[in-house]
Image (cartoon, rainbow, N blue to C red; front, side, top):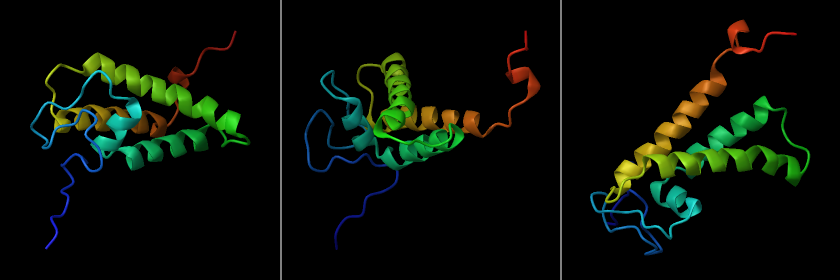
Length: 123
């Protein structure tokens, strides 16, 4: 019977680009890209959920340029978060939690009802 992937496992299939064999081994190497980290942590669908919510909040997109003008800042902020919170020797599970927590926090912020104190005062 094939082994099933648990939700808390990191996806190590198909590559050896810096991820270890299990979720308790050090995982992130300097040459890893954001795309690789998202892939291995299994957070692509979660990230896509946040991107779609942001696109909905900004009125959608009409071209590739408008899509990337919304998505690129999201990816940049996620990369900054990872660089800030990363520590040598982190496990795959620890990296997953960094990515997952950041996405969850961004989704919560987008779902908050806007209040008068959140807006800038008019001149």
